Length: 280
Image (cartoon, rainbow, N blue to C red; front, side):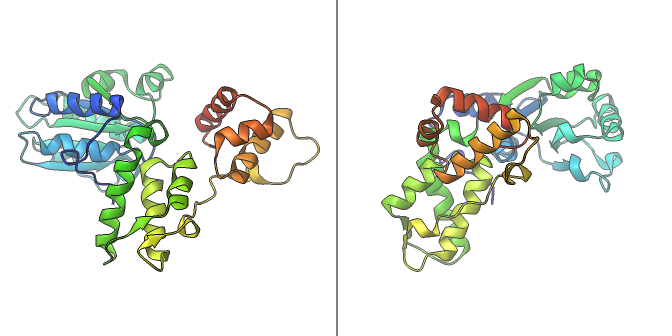
């Protein structure tokens, strides 16, 4: 699904509103925009929303993870939506630079999405500096779902409504326990994961009331969930213990911190470290 009606949704989160308003302000311009955020936060939804408010009559989409069949020569003005710009190969970067340097009136307007900090990639010589300055003029950051507590009910309700339509159901709602389970999770997969969980719940629910048993999460642990073994480093043992305790508490960070004997702030810092490593 991964589509949101930003006009209809009442967004309360300050950072999300700032990104939306800046996008609207620049929609009718030719400024190149870069939408940043973790996987699943809704970067492409925001990018498409900004395009819908522009004067551009043509939209072409380049998926950098699968760019083999894209014909750069056929780009003729309009807007080019570049998904996962941080995954662009050196060849794709070279082709994008050619587009950015066109002077014959066929240069597109660029709206890109990225999970990684392109500035850091430039410093590490993983991304062309000249292209960065051409294609990432204005940055918009989409916050994690975990940090958008004021918007969670609005987002979950919207997803539930759309999912019911998709599966021919109506009048469904979450029980108190089911909704509490949703809000206790830290959503490492962000909105995309929430869509998956709610769709599964809608399909599994036997009545219009979605009970807690229909709220099922996929394990986000990888090989770190294996048994403890002699020879492991202390940091590896710590990581496994923290992740398994979170799993035991259904991602209730307050309860997990209490069980581990650490502060919630320490736990949050550890999870941020693991997230950067691609584990949490």
